[in-house]
Image (cartoon, rainbow, N blue to C red; front, side, top):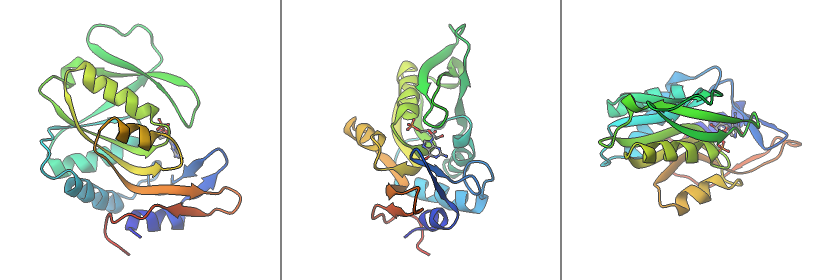
Length: 199
Ligand code: 5GP
């Protein structure tokens, strides 16, 4: 068991609707020491990759992306969520359906910050059905840039996103993969995983 998994068992809460709440350490209050360990692990897993930019999506991915960017010594770009339909010209746009809010947003990235020369590591907090990642991949492709890899803090392995993204051929690294969780008992079961330091 790794430090992220330990922390999920200690402080995570399983909610109805396949939602894992981790807001006390990951996506509302943030434990930066834990993030630092996660950043180092992503650096290890994507060692040898030619990465010059981190791309994430607002808002929960930003904190993790920043510590990963520090490890790679590269900038972070985050896709902004916007309901405006008047987005043309200088923006890359993709439509993303939110798993937690059940609504569709356009996500946008300025053309200034993503170019064909960029080699991108995509980072996010959760992977569920893969809509957020598909949107981010689409934006990288629109820019003519290259996806070097995808790093996720928590993958819910019982949902479809992980398989879909791996089938597309991307190197997808998730630090904790939840194979099963039960809102009525609070039980959380992880896939066997060698990542991060053991407790
Ligand atoms: P997907 O697009 O893969 O269906 O969902 C990924 C996005 O939804 C993530 O960016 C994350 O913000 C949110 N998300 C998905 N599942 C969960 C969950 O169980 N808990 C929390 N806190 N966020 C989730």
